[in-house]
Length: 311
Image (cartoon, rainbow, N blue to C red; front, side, top):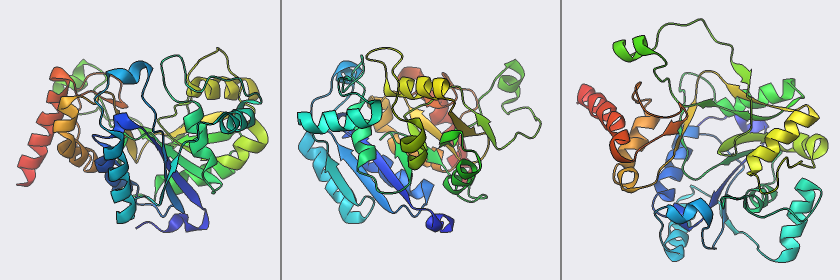
């Protein structure tokens, strides 16, 4: 296990709700294998309520099944604690007041995505640095480098305008006809390690908690009911703060759909990401994994070719 980060305490936190039941146990195990980091605590913020908005369309499970899976993860030492999100009025107002300077913010955005739930999760953490991750994100760790979390902390300490750091978003993807034709990326000039990102994403991020609380808060909404990441993006823009993202090394990818294809092939998809196996030609954005319908075929073909080569 990586030990370079022990001089800096880092909390790991992930939100969970009933729609995560079919996959959360396998993905959290994968996260811990890939990140391979000595977090001072590994926490789950559990929302026992019913999904709303866009989450109503997702494959789901039962809350008791989710609790059982989380307890098994705790028994195995994958996570340390499960904190059930408090929905009483005082708790909501206290958290929203701290982060927005007002307590009349909607607890979910216009499409049912979490606002209060994410902030509640951050409040349970004790470290000055927090890695917050959505429950479906997969990581590919660059074994030749030290942990991207350690590199991110070094960068944050050297750049007082940066509040959030992220590893690279997705593996290489064919960007033009020639790359699609030859099946590999064209050689390019050596990139710098970090670049400034245009916006903030709440899918995964390493947060300098003290910098956020002392220099950035309160968050400023541009539009009522907007996603939390939009509020972070707008606040950073008007107050002069930034998110930086790595340009090389460890990468993360977000499975957009959680349907039958994703669940059926989850073990293989996890194996692929952990082993830096991916299709250069695939649909969607570089940082997204699409698995519905024929979109999963490039992933399955890449997995088949990689496993055949080592058998």
